[in-house]
Each structure stands twice: as structure tokens, then as C-alpha cells.
Image 1: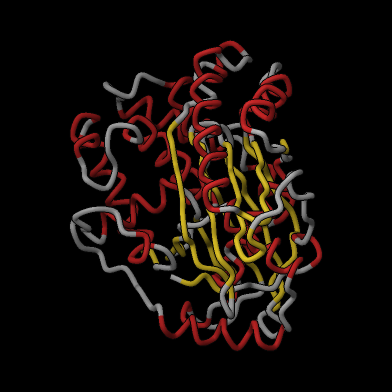
Image 2: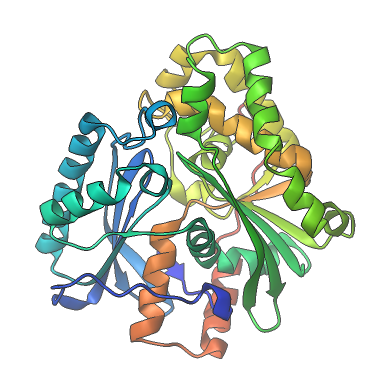
Length: 376
């Protein structure tokens, strides 16, 4: 599946220097996202209008395990993560990737030994890893979703978009100004909440016997971080004027979409770029609460590794939607890796804005996928 190349404003256009020593195939690009819960690698080849994924790797490393209580990355967590990074290094070498970038997010930002771990990880893996800020994390997410912001199949053009990315250790919220005519977007404001699916599960766990009261406490806790952002930007007033698109990019949102679509197993092509009715999402969240952890673990679209973090993710999503109620949510199965690769592509082979818009329009009409409330 080709990923169209979006064009963005200057606020989302910064590029980290590529890792040292990468001198392989100039047509292959690699991006690694080291998060609080997962280590994710993507290797992609450039196409006429974007990129095509040729290899990917994801491992649940639980780097941030125990961080909420100790403030440190544990030895076991660091060991698991280094092992995953070495697997990524082997894949990069086997594919002979020409340009590569790796970033680390909230766990390494927050941990007192985060920088020490990065130095250890770089020595073991043989490539540079940059700890990025919450702002940079938000802008990479915006970059990856730019063509969804402007996509005409989601209705009339809107001059604002609200994007949220629920992670393991933090949740990023981006308030975006969009110009559909110019196919550009710029960041008005961003919020990096110290709330993610791992931190909530540790703070309000265990998830095996989560009561409705503790679930509601997770929602209320998350909402407390959103009120000031709303007071500054007055997003609800723009929603009432029908000027906002709401975009969710996280495992939580894609899981809800897969449940509503009643997929026998998770399929990115069916979920990415779909439109999720908020009423169906609320029903799916209630269903997950009623299922209990053991049934969530056995669901073919979730599995045991992700199951403990599903309900904390739902609580974060619910808090966001409580503050900013929209009828529909655009679902994005994409993230930091996509954003990094798109930046690298523009750096080495700039495309005219006109041709990018033309490719974007063709892609928009060829991938329509509107979710219906089924499987609940």
C-alpha cells in the first residue's frame, strides 16, 4: 500500500540529522520509534507519490514499566529494549537502508536515567537515537496525518483540526490550522499530557478487576489536564461552528475501529483512514468494560500483550471526547515513523506542491472506508 506524501507548513518541517554510518541503498528509508511500551521499526521505499512499506517490526518492550513509581527505567526493561534494538539493527543492515532516524519519547524524557540508557542503547545498536520533546512528537503525528486533514471525502473543508495520539507514557494533543486550498497545515498549540496507557494502568491498576469507579477516576484524571488547553484555545466554539476535524492516531482508536468493523483479525487497510462514529465508539468502550480482561486478551484484534492497556486507552479517549465532543473521529493507523519517513523523502527528493495535491486527490477517492456500527 502506497502512503501519499502530504505537504505541511514550516512548523512541522524540522528534520533530525540521519544516523552516522548509513550509506546503503538511497531508495530505502528507515524510521524507529522507541516508546514507553513498544519499539517500532519501519523500512520504506520511495514511490511516485509517497512511500511503500517493505519491512516493519514491532515488539512490546515495556520500557516504562515501573517508571510511574520509581522515576527510573528498570534493568529488566532496558535489557528487553536493547535486545529489540539489536534486532532492528540487524534488519536495517540486511535491507541496506540508505537513510535512517530513530527517536525516543516519554519514558526516556521522564526517567532520571533516560539519557544514560540512550547512550547504552546507541552503543549496543550502532545507531543514534534522539530523545524528542512532546512538541516534536505532536508535530510528527501531524505530519503523518496531513493527507487526512485535507481529504475531501470527509466532507467540506475545515479550517481547524484536532489530533490526539494516545501513547504509553504520554498523550499528545495538537491544535492545527489547515489551509485546504494550499494543502498546508500549521501548529497553533500543542499539549503533552503526562498520561498514557502504561502510566494509567500502573496508577489505577490492576486491570484484572477494574471497577466502574476506577475507570471513571481514570477519565476524570485525564480530563483535569485538558481543561486549561480548552480555556486557552476555545476549541469547543470552533466545533460548534463545524470547523474542526477530529483525528485519532493510536492503538486505542484503531482497536475500537476494528471492533466496530467486526474484523476477524486486525487489518490496517480496513482501519486506517476510516471514519468512526462517536456513538459507536462509546458503545464499543462499554462493551470492552463488560468483557473483562480475559476476554479482551482472547480477542483476535487485541491479544494478551496489549489487553492490559486497552481500558486505560479508552479512558483517555473518553476524556478527550468529553471535552471536545465530535460526531465522528477520523482513524489513523500511522504515527511517528510515518512522519519521519515523509520528512526524509522531502529532504532528498522534493515534490512540487501541485503534483502532491494531484496524487492526494486520487488517493482520497480510491480509499473510501466509512465505518458502520456493526459487530457490537
